[in-house]
Image (cartoon, rainbow, N blue to C red; front, side, top):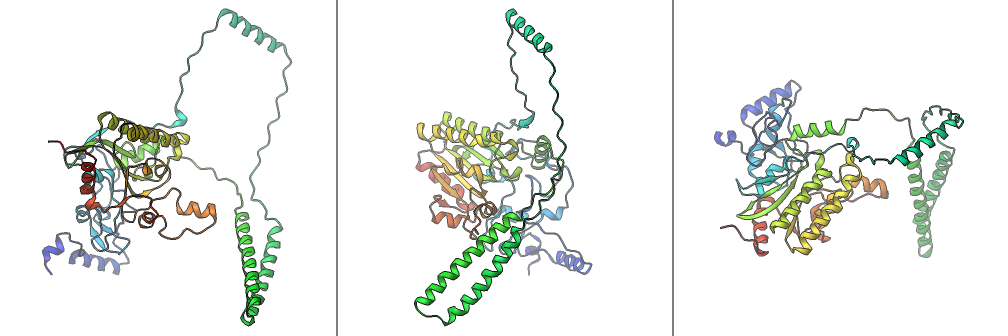
Length: 449
């Protein structure tokens, strides 16, 4: 085999020296670590985890990592679908698409998605200085009303009257009540006895079913179904009772500001979305790209504000709008403030689409869930999804715990949802820019001369 092919980083695998190292490591009981994109948090501009200068596409912090990282973790990427090994630089050139099974792996950050869609040298970011604050620490300044002389005299008289009254006895402090595990009631024993009786009846009915014919057989089947329903109901009730409330273990919660600082240092971004304007094959566009590596792409108040400002700017300048969605939903640290962003963005889109009659494209990537799916993710004039993307409102685990039913595998993936009519197109990454430019030209957005 050509040595040049082996050493050039093709996806045939590592060179012979690497294989020898791997075999020696196995003899010593060690394994060479591999990495999957689903587990990496690779930042832009570096695959070795060293501080580098950012490209022209991003104008944020220069420091990307604070801790040194083993270089081998970012040299090879494992496709979890076909277990093929890819050299990271080759995978970037192929837009993170496995050449063997065509699985669309997760792109490492939002800057690479901007490079995928926007012409080089045309990206102009917006609102990079917006940073989230801890809602619990925000102080509201209230203007104190000046009191008239008469009001002051009334207040002084009230205070004098109150001093003359007898002091009320202070209520005794309630003793601390320790939370102790709740003892299981005798009902559990009764349920166990009922299940034993039902199982015995089921065995007898199944034996009788083998010898029965005609109407008698159908009656026995109905009895079996009823008994099986009773069994499932007993199992569900006992499962709920098993959740015994134990004493809460105190833990130190990380302050929200420190939490944000760690992700800002880790990703080199200030928030979970990048917004700005650029050109797509010469056509001016306003684009927002969410970054799942920043707190799971969660939508907080700053994310909502940046997207709203982007929509308003596109409305004023009559630009087409593209938003690439990748989010786990609303940011729980900001409470109801994060939920308010759904209505705010939707209202801005109402002005953009209904009043100005402009064109909005929503691109759904994996994963897109929660409040993003429930708001601007599904409001596009054209909704495009990537292959094999996980798109849902509530996750599989939440649905199963709430409804007590098993969610079928693949029911929340792109191909199955496309059959239900949830979106318009399923596009691979290598065709995305071409199709977007054709859609924009079809809606009379022409390239600059």
